[in-house]
Amino acid sequence: MAVADVKTSREDFRGPCEAGSASKQQTTSTKIIEVSVVEVNVNVKEKNISASMAGELSLGGEVSVNRLGFGAMRLTGEGIWGPPRDRKGALAVLRRAVELDVNFIDTADSYGPYVNEELIAEALFPYPRGLVIATKGGWNRPGPNQWTHDATPSHLRKAVEASLKRLRLDRIDVYQLHIPDPVVSFDASVETLAQLRNEGKIRLVALSNVTREHIERARRIVPIVSVQNRYSFADREWDYVVNYCQQHGLAFIPWFPLGAGKVAGEVLSRIAEAHGASPTQIALCWLLKRSPIMLPIPGTSSVEHLEQNVAAASLRLTAEEFDELSEVPELVGSR
Image (cartoon, rainbow, N blue to C red; front, side):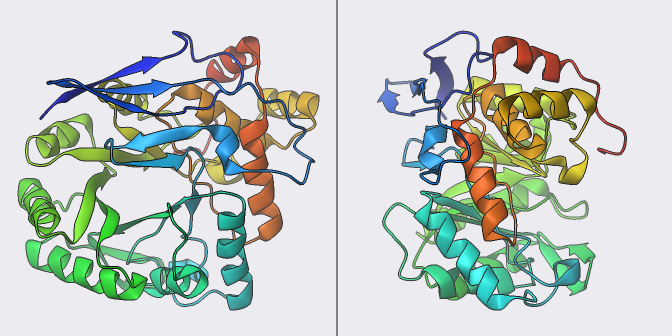
C-alpha cells in the first residue's frame, strides 16, 4: 500500500480557522493531500452559510467532501431506538443539511436500528450528485440503549446487503467497521469488507473506535480512508490517532465532536463571547483547526441547531485562542 503524506499550505495549523481544499497528486509511492487556506470572515448570523466554508477533504483520493459533515444518529427515538418523535422534522433536517452544502452524512445500521438509513433515503433519494453517505456495521441492537458486538464475516456481509437496500444504493461510498469485536478476529472482519469492496458493494473501507494498531493491521489488508473515534475540544484521548491519520493522509472523523454540553468551560465561553458565537461553534472551529484531515460530523434533530453548526465553518480563531483552548485540561466528565 502506498504511504500517504500530508502537505499543507502552512506548517502551523493554529492560524485562522482554515479550510482544507484537498487535491490528489500521484507518484509511484506517495499520495499527497494539499490543503489550501480559505480566508473567509463571515458573521455567523448571516443567512448565507455553507459547509463549503470549511474547505474540502479527499477520501482515498477518490471522492472529495466538504470538511463539515452531518452525523444522523440523533434522528432516531429515545435510546437510539425506533423512529424519531418528529419524523417530518427529521426529514427537514436532512434536506436542510444538503441545502447548506453538507455532502457527507454519517449513519449506521444500528441507529434505530435501520430507521436512520431509511430516513436518509426517504429524505434525499434520488441523491444529489456528490453526496457521500457513510454507514457502519458491527453491532446488534436487542433494545433501547443496548448494543452487542457482532463483527462476524456472516453478519457484516448481511449488514452490507441490507444497508444497500435501505439506502437504495448499488454501492456504498464509505463503509465503516463500527467497532472491533472482542471475540472475532479483527483481520477476519476487515477481510470481509475487503471482499465486499472487490465485489463492488463497497467503494471505500473505513474504521471506527480503533487504536493505531488496528489501523495499521487493517491497512495491510485493504486501503483505509478514514477513522472515526470519540474526540472533541474536551476529550483528546485519541490525539495520537489524529496525528497518525494526518501523517498517512487518512481522514479523522470525531464523534461526540461537541462534547454534548461538556465543552462549556470558562475559557471556551469567554472566547465564544468575544466572537459573538456559541461555545459549540467555537468547539467545532477548534476541531477544524486541529488538523486539515479533521472531518467533524455534529448531529442534531433541529434545523436551527444545524444551521448554527454549519455557520461555525466560517468562524476564525487567532493562534493565541487556539493555543489557549488546546492548553485547557480535559473537562471533568468528558470521558
